[in-house]
Image (cartoon, rainbow, N blue to C red):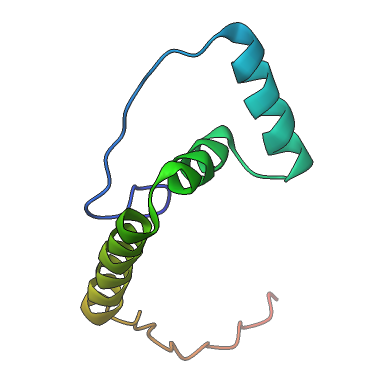
Length: 87
């Protein structure tokens, strides 16, 4: 379904100082993305290289399993009957 979080993702809530939130919002507008993406990037930059590699591997495994589980949409092709002209 559209707008659904990916499998194995979690949603969280936390507080930020107002000035930091405004900076995150500004950065998100500049990069034409959302606040969550800015926070995710900042957290990834905080991780050690080993931790970052582990997270990336986990994300790759998720994407691969999602791709393998996806089934292509099947659309029926209906024959269109011509309309009869009205008398």
